[in-house]
Length: 106
Image (cartoon, rainbow, N blue to C red; front, side):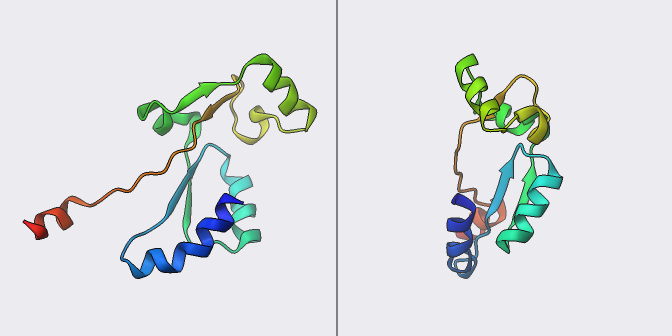
């Protein structure tokens, strides 16, 4: 649902001179299929091993009861994220401004 919402506002974001980039721990083969299915026009990058999320301190480990719940739905993070420890990123959004645009304003 979030990707669909981002796709809906993507044209307006582009008109403002900005860009949407999604960063996910899901393996590329799963995101590629979703990208095509949803006809997304923005990039999705894979954060393997949650290295970027760790830099922003956005990683948490699911407790055992939630691991079991995920498994009961067939959602195993070791399959989709290659993450055997059941770690996930905390959802976050960032607005990043390029340095050169800052220089033009001064």
